[in-house]
Image 1 (spheres, helix red, strand yellow):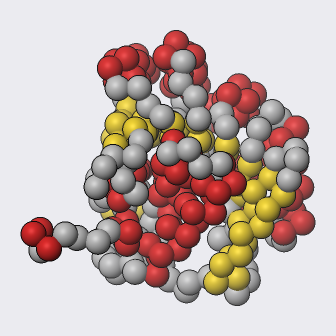
Image 2 (cartoon, rainbow, N blue to C red):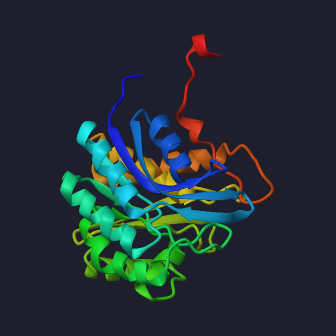
Length: 270
């Protein structure tokens, strides 16, 4: 397989491999692209929750972004866990200095088990500065509620939240509807020109660890390969749904999904 594009991932590490940088690398690789990383934090976690978080210094995060991009220029960028104001400002500075574009932001705020991954001051900076500088923001419903300060209990609420995010300066918004109680899963893509709703059957499972990380990385991969943002979202959602369907059922808590669902292994490697 020929490598299709080069993706820079700026995010935290998940020791259990289901989310964070590990999920990002698996997703990008499985979709035929080359993954590069700037690690923002190291976590000790498994499917039952997060035990500890060790932040990486903002200067070292900047060094990773700038030194990597100087040598191998990314076709797109995925941003995940940014735990402090200092880190957000450093990432913004490095993105500008390196002249990076095609940026997907997954505003990671709370881990599946409920552990908070970003402080309140950093959330304000993300709202005021970061979302204006990216091409797409991909919050789930709890994250969209934090960013917009409204309760989301319906598709109409999701559309209203997306409009608020556009008013805050976001260019494109994908709100993920997995937290709504319904038989079908509805994700909404919105910009100032169009609204699209992606409808899929909801799969009843606890194995959803890392779905947000995986989706944003998949979108960044398709976008870096030259697809439109809307098409990248559609294909990314399809990839994640297939990964959930073929989940390996690992762990005692919220298990990982199957990032290898897109793979066909050549005979000589079997």
